Length: 142
Image 1 (cartoon, one colour):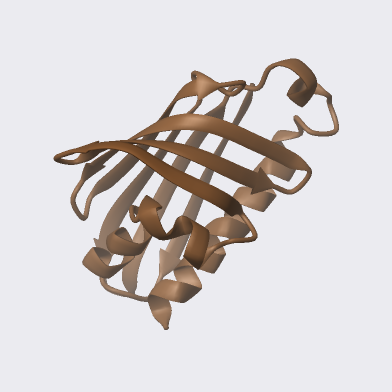
Image 2 (image 1 turned 45 degrees about the vertical axis):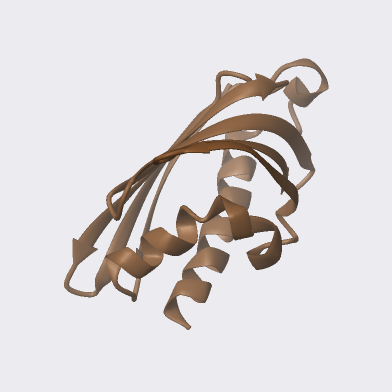
């Protein structure tokens, strides 16, 4: 299991930042180096089930995720299928004078070959996920 937390400040309005970060439909277009494929399976109100292919450094994850959004405030991802089933990522968006503060809490449950110590280094996964957040943040600021 790899747990980590991140805090980022993005110089853009909270609503705009939330739109980019919770827009799983466009992850493949916005950050193709991290998301090689996205397939939407079901959408109902603020809940969606999505098949995702995520690359975090040396770690390649193919999973089914449930995205739950509370507009402009919270985006939660529950991994409901795949080898990382049971993983959870929470992104909270807080309005501040400089723009938006994003608090990320991740709990990645990895099984099988993904448990190899070199791949399961929390600091390494945190660094790669932080780069993904930075990249999305730059898109928000442009």
